[in-house]
Amino acid sequence: MRYLILSDIHANIDAFEAVLDHAKGSWDRVLVLGDLVGYGAEPNAVVDRIKALDAESVIRGNHDKAASGIDDGSAFNYVARTAALWTGTQLTPENLAYVRELPVGPVEIDSLTEICHGAPFDEDHYIFDGSDAGRAFRAARHPLCLFGHTHLPAVFKLIDGALEGHAIDSIRDAVIPLQRGARYLINVGSIGQPRDADPRAAYGVLDDEAREVRTFRVPYPIERAQQRILDAGLPPSLAQRLAFGR
Image 1: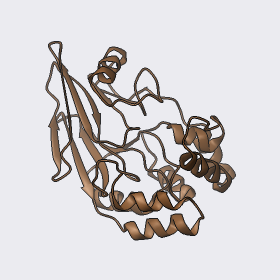
Image 2: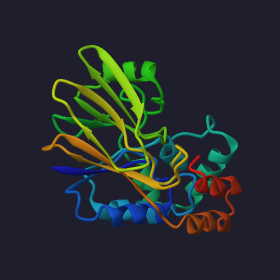
Image 3: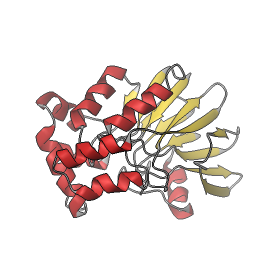
Image 4: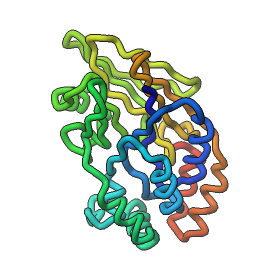
């Protein structure tokens, strides 16, 4: 089975459509790791596109919670909270209900894989370093846990008690073999708002038979996404950062 891994789309329909076009024919089922909305200017278009994919599993992120009223966004900075509140006013009743009802991670996909937004022990926790990864490995129940939230492509590996971790090189497509006897935490990066200084959209494909995860970067019309943000009256910084991948 080949799973298309989508994370942190953040209402960026231009990046999302570019990813779906690039990934065409390379997947059988879809996994969405949360934050469908927030920051970007096209929340309904993104939610509609997700629903049309008939995904195997879609879980919520912290921006989905804030936009749908589950969380008040008080922990967000001003720009993020402004975007979340705006998103809540823009979503159609049907899409607002869809986002509000997204399940909490972690969710089991099969005997190999589980997915979460932040971490398997806390959906809102960021996995940045070895300390975070150690806690996540203790909480995870499967050899592979796919996560998002940080917008930073990274892989952590635990084998024979030794923990390794590194950023995924964005210069070229990467292949991460899943060694038997090892456990993995993998973040394929963000579609809608990358933060590793590469503005291209990021996604991945898990092939559970080949036991590997492939990661990809895809250019998209950033200027169009920026203009949508400005036309919506959202904070200009949300448009500006897209060009820098920060």
